[in-house]
Length: 255
Image 1 (tube, rainbow, N blue to C red):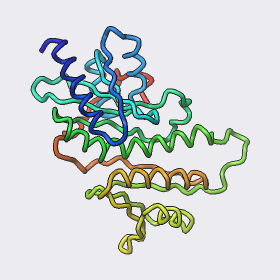
Image 2: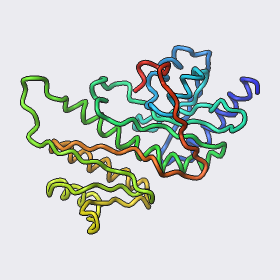
Image 3: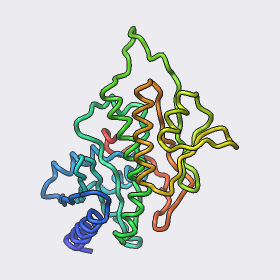
Image 4: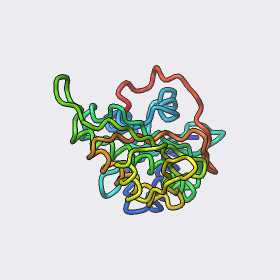
């Protein structure tokens, strides 16, 4: 397939995808005519899984960047596989935050989608954006609340909460302190009598993302760290499982 055919296919897919996502997104196409832009985008791709592996094999030659009104950004890449077609979609790390803010934050690894932008929009909303919003909340908090340096007082509360993805799309915790439980319940989590932990339904992914972000910010303010455990078993129609691949040649500064 000629480069201009691939370029047009990617740009068209990204334009339709942007129009299908919740809120207002603008799609911008980048090609090898803007090599510096592509290099800068490569450094900001927030993934250490299949997108990083793909870039290690196929350096970025074109991309579409989707930008939301609040500054959130996604990047759409060609999958570089004539047999499968489709695209790779990942989050872009914010440009204005220090590297230290990303310490200990799980990357909201990208997803692999087919050629249907309408189905892909649902997958982005239900999967990638949920993890992206949670990771954004964490790094933004880290940027405004730097970790104490040696010799300074540490936070008095050392509790860490892990939100784990469930097969049905819900998020669940193990047992937590009363302080944490109060925050979780106030943001839509429900006590699970069977496990003693708390669950947040995934029936409404947008509401789930808002609840996770609000709970994360409120817990962070109390000195309680929150980690979103990357889903490993759940899959969705049109999403292929990530292939394990060594990453020694992935971009050095990739988040």
